[in-house]
Length: 436
Image (tube, rainbow, N blue to C red; front, side):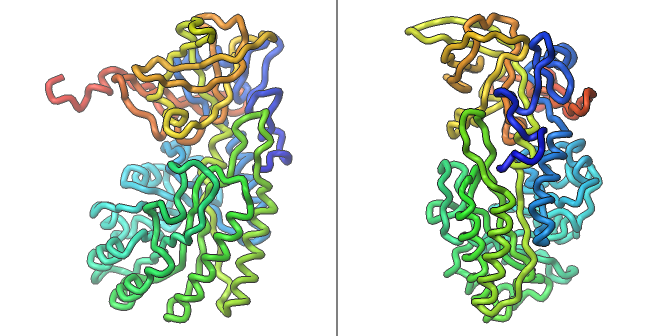
């Protein structure tokens, strides 16, 4: 993402998005790391709502001139307080499960601003769509469309959008690639005869348009543009069958700069403008009406706002390498272990100029290497370490591996802080054990 327009979205001397006090201690949202750790314990995830608002403003500035609608991909991180914060913005929200749907509902999201995703929707989720609890259902496959048609018989008209796998692959890790011939998602362009037949026989399903999402952490604007062009060509084919695509949703996956030393980034304004221009050109060339456009950023809105705070529990050197072990683990951030994700570490409790390449690890019964990066040579037990850009896919993917408790999540903003998810207790971890 292009982060040059708002100072809150800058990396400051290796800090994202925090700053240091005069005594060298890290602050997040104007609150010192020490105060956060003392108040809420560690591990801890702090979400800076000012940074979130800056990211939303950046997306709106890029999208509104082209009439592009924005929906927040709730899978990145969705808590009631966070969703309630988003209700006050023009954004919609995408949910992938009953759990995410209920979270959005309890936050006050109106149904018309909720879209239901998922490649294997349960009967309960389809029933929620039929009951009008979501505004749009994104249908992944013909079987799902048939089940939805059966469930919707006699119900009010249900807007549906077909998810298309355009075959375009983004250059990203296989685990976060959602387009191309090696992924499970969507309907191939040559597989639309059966969905068209189902739609014709199901008057309660109201075809609204097409959706495509090609992956995550994409830094090449050309991939988004080509995917949008391909989606218009699919829309043109359906138009000839009598199905007019009023909407085209081109997904998310806008790359976020994770490392201050890496210039990787996406020019957001140019990418959105390129998508809009390509859709208009392709629509004119294929003779279809220019559809409304939508995007679904998740990580690109919330990742930069998140900072994880850990306490050092052990420092050692073996086989010529320094190791620092913190009180977090693969349980609160599985991303490095899953697909080699990089999160930039900094010493949060103080400054120290001399650094060395250090293996930063968690404490689980796995080789849960978080990152290899420069850390001060004098790191000691009880120091605080901050890991940057952890707003997305950390807490939302956390677990109770080793029966660890999930961390607290706090909102920080302009020097104030408040909890938005409590730290679990051991009783919480054991609550479903039948003989506990």
